[in-house]
Length: 341
Image (spheres, rainbow, N blue to C red):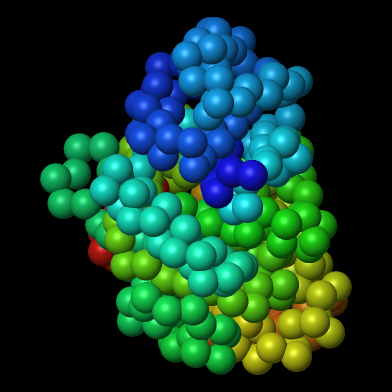
């Protein structure tokens, strides 16, 4: 069995996938690199096959009909044989030194008989044209260099949460929790890191800058204008996360800090949905914002109250044009500080 399976979802990725794959190959026989060709129309499949033939013991290729990012991640999980599982998007890459440290630490834990559920590391915003690279770290919130549980987790900052770039999951945990991402939908990476949380019992945080998250292309899904154009998909993901929280509530309530973390995550996602709907300046989108908050209220009034009473929730629901202007001004300040989209 491999130590780590790494899925690379690819759709028309021929222009940049080589950099991603090359950064992962130094893992050698400890890793399984699963290139998932999601119905590409360029020569993505040819490049994937080239690497498979060159590294038959390391690279696996899955060719499938186009189903979107979530569908490609699902295929990666289905074909994974590694003890642990990670997703690396085809336009991103990893730091080799941090990569080696993570593999060594996972092996050390296994030698001690420790099968942790979630391994966390830092990621770097590789924003196009920016000299200063923002690093997302968790050392203020998570214990370092030891196995810990939710009871040991400290306070996450407002607006901070663990992204897909930060996390490595135990592969069977993803299967045990029945994770199945929706097809033909953007922004499902939030579901990928949200849904397994109630099943996570043991964690480990290594303070290394592992994942390099490239942002800045005009056509990227996280570009603000692209997100506004796809706002219905953002709302769909938002509602699916609310539904899951409600469905898993009995399991979640039993773990107070995990529940608090999930509520904070929903706070962030609902804030993103709300601010983009306001930012569009379309009357129909202001109605969609009202409908989203009403949906949350109808599913779980206590959750709705928690979201509305938080710092972010309050800011998203300031009344009138002046309230919306204050919301947008706050959003712009956050953009400058955190360098997102």
